[in-house]
Image 1 (cartoon, helix red, strand yellow):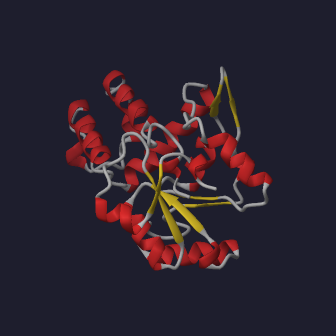
Image 2: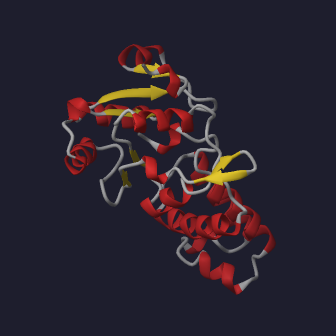
Length: 217
């Protein structure tokens, strides 16, 4: 499944942390070291960098340098207790029930595998957190599997988890990902979560659509 189907904030936690740090610590050498991988024209000052990050986020551009920085910020933020992962209320109990039923659960995300492991290690649970990583049998990113928009990536995942494509279900909120997974022979379901881009009538006819994981039998 795509990680974006599970959380409320769509993996933007690190972007928010970055914007706060950029505003408060621009002249700190340690912060300048963190952003050295960004294109030079995007970092003459804090305002320009923030504008660039916001633009990447709004357009859902998976820039390698931003993902690298996210990983560093997440590791620090989660370890310090400054970040917790908010999931939709239906997610944890449903994943647990699927795992108990013997289903193989895997994550495919544009966020790195290391970021995924951090993300699911600190899931909000009342006033504390819980680690959901034991629920997943495998984690994939664009390095280990390939682009999320190419059918070959989904074929690679099926091969690595030892499952026939026809026996795999992929949950995503991204229509282009759904098309790629379907081309690989995987049964794909679109998740229509709050804040997602609206789905056209044609897409709703082409794919099964759910609003919660509990909508699945």
